[in-house]
Length: 102
Length: 136
Image 1 (tube, helix red, strand yellow):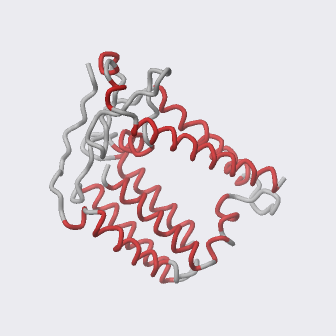
Image 2 (cartoon, rainbow over the protein chains, first blue to last red):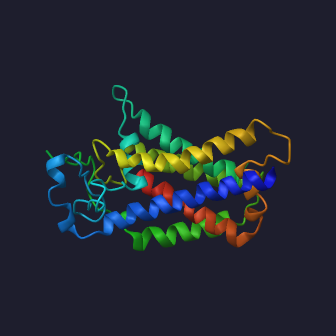
């Protein structure tokens, strides 16, 4: 059972690495491939690179970076309280404590 | 209509916002953090000082923020596949807490993080990703 669970963790981590690679590959695509995507409302604001993200050829959509997803979640507010930001940063604080201090 | 980025509440570039400054700072903190074993006051103190500072920087926006998307494409669901697999595996193992045949991720990582170098590297990765989150 231990081997099975360890394998599942490894598979999950490999899946994360694969999706991360796909998202970075999409971000590195030439800007010209994004032409027309804006008309479909599919291009989400680029981050860091300073230009719109490219669209994955064939699929019509690029895979967003994990930081984009985190930023989207962190933008969630209830009134003036940045609930999403506190939740995500608090979770990452807990992760550090759990692995390095507990 | 293309989705435009939200206005960044703080766009001023400061010295501590530059990778040339932050990477050595994080490397230094990670080098120190790697020296503290788990369950020690030093490890707890350092993690909480860093966590508290990062949370304050992130919520206050003093570190500046990069633009974030207003909506996500459906392809964002691809991230859900490995994340769900990891979460369900962790939950499955957590439901069998105490049984060594069902190790949680942290139990599997404990022997790895006992060594100074892997611990310092993991500390650096945690700090770096924390900084990425703070800047969103």
